[in-house]
Length: 132
Image 1 (tube, rainbow, N blue to C red):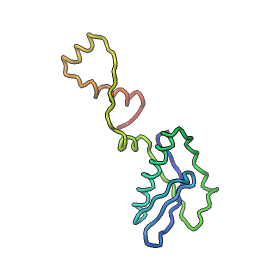
Image 2 (cartoon, rainbow, N blue to C red):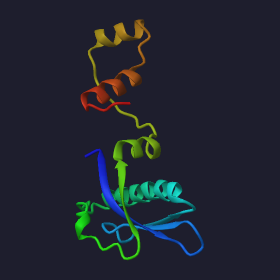
Image 3 (spheres, rainbow, N blue to C red):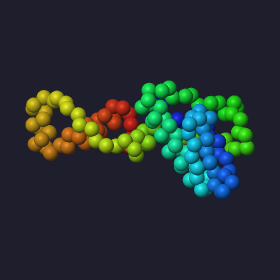
C-alpha cells in the first residue's frame, strides 16, 4: 500500500487560484495559486490527513468511486500519493537500534571499515523491496 489514489475536487477561488476538498477526508482542505500549486498542496494535505489518521489509530478510508462523487461546480482530479516518498521527506530522522551479531563477524567488518548503519539500511530496503 505504498501508492494511493484519492479523488479531490478542485474549485475556482473567487480571488484567483483553486481551493481543494477531498470527499474521503472531510476535514482536509487546501489551496493554491494555480492548478500546479493546488495539486502539490493537495498531495501534502492528503499526506497530513493520512498520517494523522494512522497516528490516531483511525481507519484509512477506501477511495470513493469516481462515479459516486457529486462535483458541485468543481473539477474531479485524482491525487496520487506515495506513502514511502512522503515518509522519506517528513520522517527521516535516525532512530537507534540495538542488535547482536557474532563477534568474529563484527571484527571482520570493523577491519574492513564497514559502515554498519549503511549496511543495515541497504539490507532492510532490499528485504522490504523498497527502491531508493
